[in-house]
Length: 171
Image (cartoon, rainbow, N blue to C red; front, top):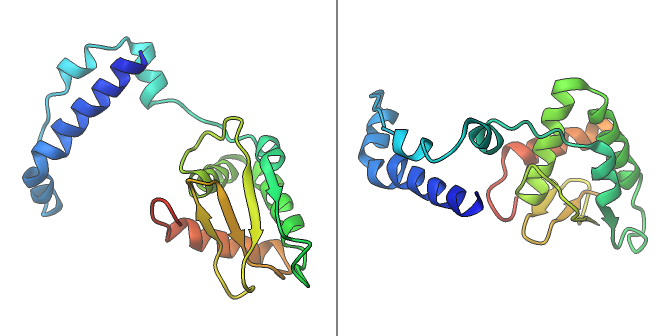
């Protein structure tokens, strides 16, 4: 199924994006188009389609917490409680139902480029100052957080800004 999945994703990209660029531009201006995806969809069973496109990934806060590797925090003269606050915030999101799940998923995508952590770790490093926003390097799965933050609310505010203003690769 993996080879077929790659083929179908490539087909869908060509059908919906590459060959339809003018139609997509027109859609931006308010026009609607239809793409016939039946040939591609016929290659998969309903279960495979569900697994690939409709799956719900539930981020596990305990797995995320276990994945953290804190580097260089002891070398920062006054780190405040940022590492502890991050752990508390992830735990809080884990207890906050659907909204918390959304935040955990945003965090994973921001930090790793994926909504599925797998068996990987996330390296957490201190940033230059509390005034800076958090930064994520998805390729190395490294996040840089501002040191000296005093509250969960301050860390959450900075992370949400980072989630909403990130770009692929280095966010």
